[in-house]
Image 1 (cartoon, rainbow, N blue to C red):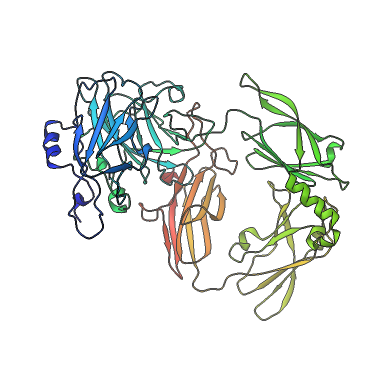
Image 2 (image 1 turned 120 degrees about the horizontal axis):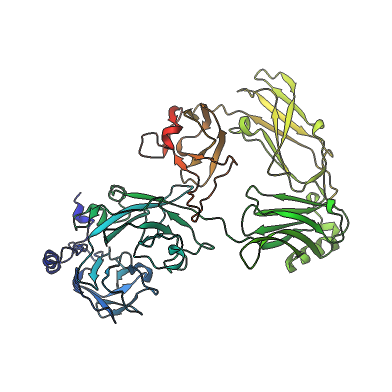
Length: 600
């Protein structure tokens, strides 16, 4: 397959021109026509100014791209100027030309690049113009250096499309908040970026998910990545550089063959301000609060008209979301008035103990539904008078997580001693067993019930929760239920074993699905040893490893001003290149993993 098929070339006249101006980018082509439907993308036939032009006027600058057919602007955000101005370039159509203008004057003695990737399509069939980058200067020379890189999500290591990479000569920490960069670029579908025609100097490098397109970092709404050290370009740009060609984004092999000089991992900083951002009454005795920042500090909390001990509260692991329950069976008013004293950010930006009264009120819909239930007691469902619980016993994970029980509301009476557990062996012989109950440290309504002896293949296990042994804050008792579980015996199932060495820290090890958006199994390790992922169906999986530096069992984000990167995440690559693990049927896969080398 010829590379030229994927790298658009400019027509002959501009090729000759590029010999005179070596900073031009040859990147449009005219494929052979044929067939009733037009599948040929537009081709540039004329440019003004010419590639590599110098001393271009700063005032009322106009760039004209003339095509061989009528075109339309498909995505105005694809018209990208580097270095950017305060306002985005304006692109309009004039005949067969795209005319780009600017609302303010260009800077003096500056090399500019104007990129059209993904911005233009033909007028009839919508064939996308593969892109072109025009370079020109308002000074007497063209800057000649370049750089490439990769931007990815810090947790999934997935490429981040449409991120903005920013270069600053100003090395102060405030520059990315307050100033326009001296060069910028957008990442493509593969999170890849290339910045050409920049100065030979030291840069601070950032990448942001620029939600408002102002080419500056807004910490309250945007994510960011930064390079730990200053970067100095080491490669001089020329038209033959593979990384600067315009590729079809669907061609995986060609896109992945590009080499990135740096990698940037994008994270969301914890907000700098603390206050209550959301409140909601979700039930007669239930509500929740959401805080702007994690690690909320509460000094005191009560419901007006009720003793303090009647209020049950529970934070999530990040301590930015708080569930509330009222342990009182009296009829609750339409509005619960929560008096809360917590550390709130004041007008000077400092945390200060502040008392607020938060009104927790029913919505109109909630009030109507409650009135309907109170009026039509005959329509009341059986579950409306029960201590509701959800029970789970997954054959593939029961050895790790046990029988799981989660109650809808906090309990005021617990009857764990009344649980009965038994096993039935393959010869149908029954035997009683004992269990231990493990209360979830992060969810007071969630419990794990583990047998005191290991599970065995071929055995059936039964856990019975008797009637009326648990009572919740509504005064309702539970219904009886019995769970049955058997370890998988499907001979087609497979397993993965990791023999972990060099474990000198605390790590979170997770088995994920192919898309990396679902955790199948999760372990926390602190020493060398084997880690088994059993009972796997044939398919593709990923193994994510996170270095838990502060040992809090979660993946912590970074901080720009403290120059702290997010906690390191690595994906295990069996072949050293690809993170996807292809599991076949009946496979027992074993790998050695040197954690010290992986996180070096």
